[in-house]
Length: 326
Image 1: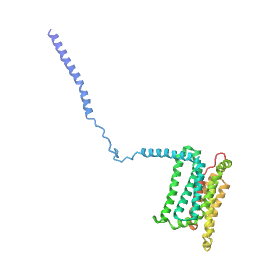
Image 2: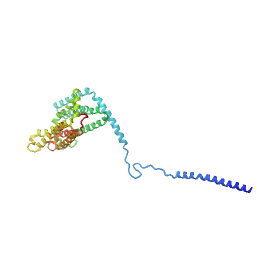
Image 3: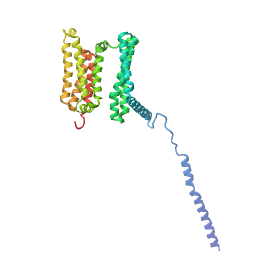
Image 4: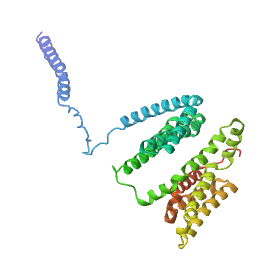
């Protein structure tokens, strides 16, 4: 029995050791809890910083959102003006009549107020006609580009109105006057402005006629029409200066320089008409821009208007592509 008692006591000792082992198995839990306690917490990075100490660039999501909002607003403006232009027979004739009446009033009793009124009404009429005949034509062809076309148009109109407002303030003595060359060019171009405006809008008005519209579209697809037409107008304006002031140019070589530049623009327009290919038009467009810059030496940029027409002609000729199947 002593052996049995010793065996029982050994089992009890081993059982207590097993219980101790079980209790010791809980030590890893305490270790894990200790590890969890001492796990380093992720500290948020300071604003404008990065782990490497470099500054982070701000997000452009705000600018992107503003661009999307402006694009939707531009589309709304474009479609609204398109609906407005579809009713042009209601507002355009009265506006044109009021503009002509303001011009007649200015000729009968000239004053600064009548001049400002006549110019403002005439400029408004021409801007509305330009937007309706040119810009709305692009919008109707591709409605997806409405926002881009409206944005470019508003930027161009803002620059034009800003320049005219600057001229008004400089005439009133509130701002310094522009350079003398630009003033002389504007002074020489003023008598020609009505004729140039009529010459510029005449193809647009004729091209809107129902019987001529299909031929007008086909012509613009086969030839860089606006490049040719603006190059002819720019060449004539450059020729105008030495011909108008020939006695002043007679004893200098500037008369031959002006004749050379003007005739070169006309020759480039003829090249585009005879060889309406994209490669040749790109080369001609570059030469037209160069001639527009050279025209300021001796002809004051063709009374300012000539250089502008040549730049527009060069840009159109460089970007022109023949229509498919032409």
